[in-house]
Image 1: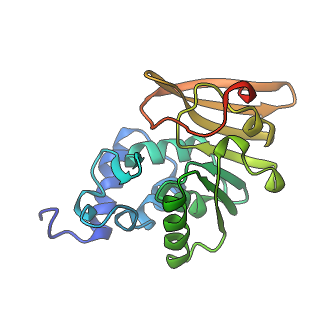
Image 2: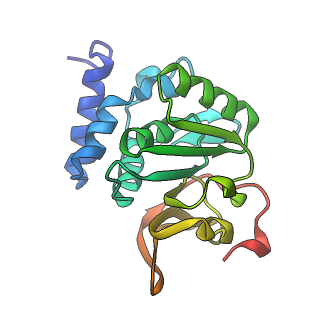
Image 3: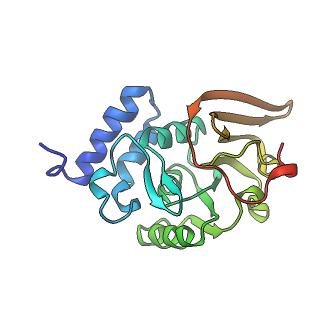
Length: 218
């Protein structure tokens, strides 16, 4: 059966099997989330047939929807169990937001591009993700009035860890983000009573994180 004749559900099943499970992602909650979320609804019109390919896709305004493997990998690294409060920075089309909403109790999502923010909010509401709040704004500031968060996922690359985001991470919480400019590394930070541990996971390529950073970054 060709890609043109497979149903979206069949395409998602193939995507999960070939791009996630076959590459070492074993968290069944994450795999099920990517099976459920209709990725084809989060890409621009005309790109639906490319939605499940193993690559990022442009969504306008210089932004992209991450490839399925990276969405699954970052989601699995947060080790969500279902009770968490999660902050996402760089919501883009809202796809990663929807995956997080399948895995956590509540999600707060920030997007700096007003047009993408409005479209993501409308799309998530249309798909029934009622436990998601979407705000248009600079991700460097986080969402202080909703903090602390059990997990934070950043889907754009700053040069350094935004100090405000680290400060909004709850004890025991995890923060995952790409760091760097030309060469980027996906980094996982975890807060404990002893301090913050840092683990470098894999090389990646994300769009740069825009907004007001600099001296407030760690």
